[in-house]
Image (cartoon, rainbow, N blue to C red):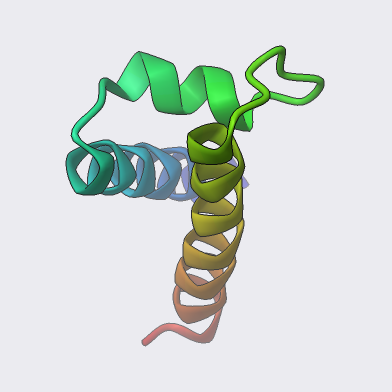
Length: 67
């Protein structure tokens, strides 16, 4: 179980790095945007949250399915 959690944490970090690179911002900014009850309320923050949700959901689905 711990191993699986470690994989999901690693996957989350990779997705955050990818989004930060795509939007030319820092990973800490991305983490702040996706944090629950974030105080970041801008169009960029909304885009980042949506992109994270979609990308992470697809990545975890692929990890779960083993592809």
